[in-house]
Image (cartoon, rainbow, N blue to C red; front, side, top):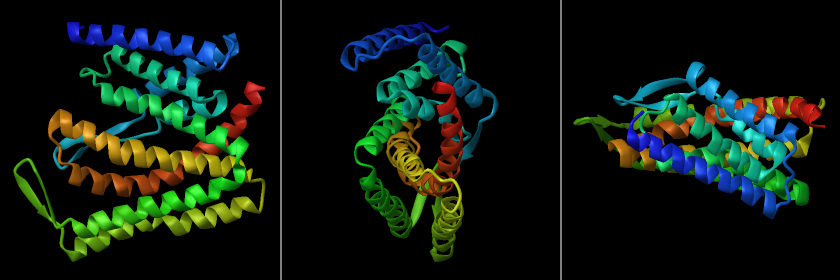
Length: 270
C-alpha cells in the first residue's frame, strides 16, 4: 500500500470515529448492536456491488462513467437510521474501498460524494415526517430544474473537445440527446399511476423520488464532473450532457428499487 493511501485511510478512519462520536452526543443515538450491524452490512454490500456488479465505461475515451446500484445500500442506511448514520455508512464504505485496494487513487471529493449519498436521504425522510405535504412541490421544482437545465445545456452546446478530438453537436444529435433525456418521463408517470391504485405508500415513494433526484443533481451531475475535471482534466461539458441522460434513467430505476427494498427492510428494523 502506498504511503499516501495509508495516510488517507488513517485520516478517514479518524474522521469516521469523530462522526460516530458526534452522532452519539448530538442526536443521542444509542450504540445498539442491531444498528451497528446493519450499517456495517450495508457499507459492505455497497462495496460488493461496486466491485462485482458495477460497470465503468469510457466517456469519450475516459473510463469515468459507472453504471450500477452500489449507492442504494448507503441511501437506504440514511433513510432507515437517519442522516448521521447514513453519512457514517458512506464514509465507512469509502474506507472499505480504500482498504481493499479497489480505489487506488484516493480523493476527498469522492469521499464527500459517499457521505452525501447517506446524508441526503436521511434529511429528506426527516422532512417527509415533518412536512409530507411539501414533498410534491420540491419534486416538481427539481424535476423542472433537472430536465430544464439538461435540455438548455444540450441546446447551448455546439461542440465538445476531449483528447484533442472535437465532437460537433448538430441539431440531429441534439434532438436525439433531448429525446433520450425525456423519453423516460411518460413511462415513470404510467408506472406511478399503476402503483397508486394498489398499495403505494405515497409519502414514502415521494421521499425516495426527491432523494434520488437530489442525489443525481448534486452528486452525479454537479460534483462528480468537477472532481473528474480536477483529477483528469475531463471537460465538464461532456460529462454534464452524458450524465444528464444517465440521470433521467437512474432516477426511475433507483426510486422504484429503493422504495420496494425500503419497505421490506422496515420490517427487519422493527
